[in-house]
Structure formats: structure tokens, C-alpha cells
Length: 433
Image (cartoon, rainbow, N blue to C red; front, side, top):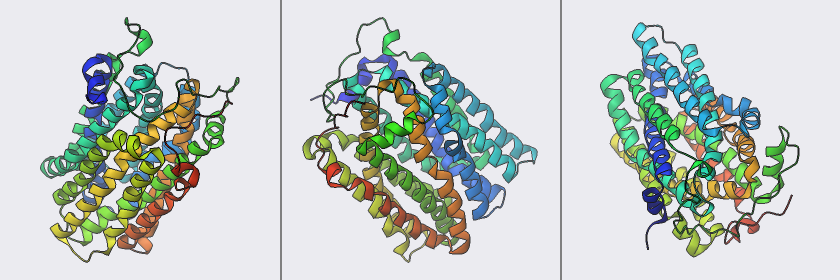
């Protein structure tokens, strides 16, 4: 049987261009994830508080503007918004190596650039959530999500290691040029893709997707006069969307506490080199690729609820193993790689299930507005987690921060482990509004 994602990529030129651009942008994002903390900690000789401040600045727009952005972007040209956001990212990120070369780079300036870059990323993400369902047919939605996610996880395999080598070669600020090139490729891919209604063909090719789902056209009727709070009412009015949202928000906050303290503990205290740490994080990419590729098959065989439970076990419980190993250097790097591998498998599965469920349960006419509400809750917890990571690291130590972050991941799984969710075999049919 042919793989549905591969069939979609081979037959749908418009989606293929979008997919290629997102792959390049994802590769650049891996560089950013390594380079920005190192710019703060090494190039600017700053401590945990400054590292967490810069990280929080990049995600603060999600906390401040998600509801408003989703409301304003609803009904607008998604493609145009995405291209503009990518090009603005290029201009903003270019200021970091320029300021570094000129000798006037500082923590406040880095935080300001990161904040504005986060605003652009917010606009792109909200628009993309609604753009993909418009780009492919309903039966191809799960394979499309899997194709994009698979490429993202492939970049996680190679990205951190290459990012570490790139940082070692040209410095953390200079390495951000790779991120800029990724955004340029993303803008080109989005600009050259066309939603289905704009194409000359009457229908997009079907790929035989096997993602468990209920009947077609399952979106409830949206409110006649949507408001700023419409997206929140949609998310918290459905028990499955509510569980997904609460889990994601808690998970993201806990992950910030875990990862921001992990890089400081491993690199500064446990003698793990920058290159070794980057290679260890690549384990998450390998696991994510395995999880992404097996997500549809696992949900077909076990049912959506049990498959989701397995993914939560791997992504939320396994990280507890990180801070208990009394090892250093390459040995600790190997432990981190193993944990990230298993965690990545769980995340790879869960990302496909969550994204496709939300795109099919949320009314099609309210995708962008509801995505803004989801982002407000989910990503809005990231700056709070980043700031808390700095407090925990400064007061209790960075190793304790790793343990506290891992415990938070376990707590995040609880809203999903209900009998109603575990009994799911397919994506449920929502009740009419």
C-alpha cells in the first residue's frame, strides 16, 4: 500500500512547494533554538536569569496578542499574511549579527528583537493552521500534517548537531544567518502555493488517508456574530478540545523549565560540550520521525485514545530519568540522547493526533480565530514557564530545575487520561452548536 503522505507530495505540486518551504524554515529554527541561549550566555556572558528573559521575550507575544491576532486574521488572505511574517523575520534577525559585529549587542536589544520576531511567528502560525486545510482536501489533511511534521522532525535530527557545529565555526550570532535563509525559503514556498479553490482543477487528488475520523463535514455551526472570545468558547465548550488545550499549556510551561535548566546544567556544570549537547538533542528528532511515521498506523490498530495514551507515557514520563544520572561529559550526553529519543516518539505521535483533531473539530469558518484562542492558552504559558525556569534555576539550582520541569510534564498528561478520552477509537463527531 502506498504511503498517503508520499502520494500527496508526489501529486499535489502546490502542497509540495509549501512543504519544502516549511522544511527549510524548520531547519533554520533549530539553529535559533541553540544559538539564542548561547548568544545570551556566552557572547553576552549572562546568567540563567538573562537566558530565561530572552527566551520569554520570544514567546511573550503569544501570551499578549494571540486572541486579538486570531480575531483580526480571521477571513484575511492567509498566504499574504504568512509571506509578510516570514520577510519581517529576516529583517529582524539580521539585526543580531549586525549588532554583534558592531559591538552594541545587549540583553535588552536581544530581548526586543526576539519579542518582535515572536510577533511575526504568531501571525504565521495562526494563518498556517487555517491555510493547510484550504490547501488540501479533507481526506488528505492527516497525511499533509504528517508530511510537514515528518520534515520538521527530520530537521530535529540533523539540525541541533549542525547548529552546534555552525555556532562553533562562526559564533552564535553569525549562525542566525541560517535561520534567515530558512524564512526566505518559507516565504517563497507559501507565495508559490495555491489553495484548492484558486486552482484550475476542480478537486485535489485523494491519497487514501487512514487517519481515524468520523464522517465528513463534522464542524459545528459557528456563532452568527463571533467575538474576541468565540475561539475560547469553542475550545472549552468541547471536552476533547478542552483536554487537548489544558494538556498543551501545562506541557509547554513545564518544558521551558526543563529545557532551559537542562542546557545550563549540562553545558556549564556537567562538562557536556556544545557540540555534544546539540547531538544529544538530535535524539528527539530521530524519535519524532519514528513517532510521526507510525502515528496513523498506531491509531488505526489501537484506536485514537489508546494511541494517545502511549504517546503521553513516552513524552511526559520518560524525562524524569534525566536528572537522576550522576554522570558527566559524553556519558551524560548519551543519557540525554536516549531520553530525547523516547520523548520524541511520543511527541511525534501526539502532534499528529492533536493537530488533526483540532482542525476537524473546530468549525472551518473559525479556524484562525480558534487557533488564536488555542495559542493564547497553549503558547501563552511558555513565557511564564521560561520566567519560572530562571527563578527555579537561580534559587534551587539548575539540576533541581530539570527535575521540577520533568515532574510538570507528568502532571500535564492528567487531563488527557480520562475514560472518555481513552475510549476514543476515532476523532469524535462534535455536537451541533
